Length: 208
Figure 1 (cartoon, one colour):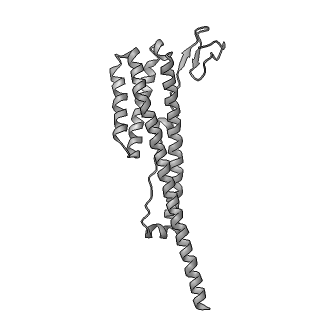
Figure 2: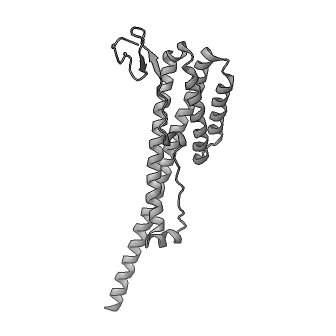
Figure 3: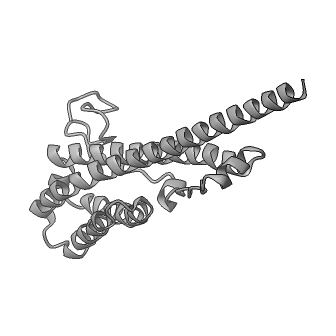
């Protein structure tokens, strides 16, 4: 009877270790998958920058310092490669450079009403949102994984098999301030300043 009890306990311990180990593997893979999603969204954003710079050059070529800042910060993001933490840090600087670029566009009437420019602006705004969402999902996955590593008794299994805590990716300062790339167009009919999210004037409903 004693041997049966010991054997039962041993089997239960083995099952617990097995399920806990597999759970840690699943959580770690989820973290890695969410991290890859950030990389994908960052790449999509970076692919838009050359076209944006080309369009702005057509109207504001003498704004060299601002254009160079955008190109330089984009290059820093690309140079980060698979180092997501470094890429996100560089992306913070890129977001600031883009904000400056969009700010000067207000001084160029033809530029801020250029269809290609407006499309790129909207695509970049959507890319920023997707990166923010991907970062949030990543941090959620990291939180759950780190909890398993720190909490008893799963921390015993984690130490035995060399599982280490993952690092959170903090939001950029611009995201904390809720800065968005939203600019206005003047209605050709009534002259009102309208957001670029609609093809019609918000006031007189005339086409923009």
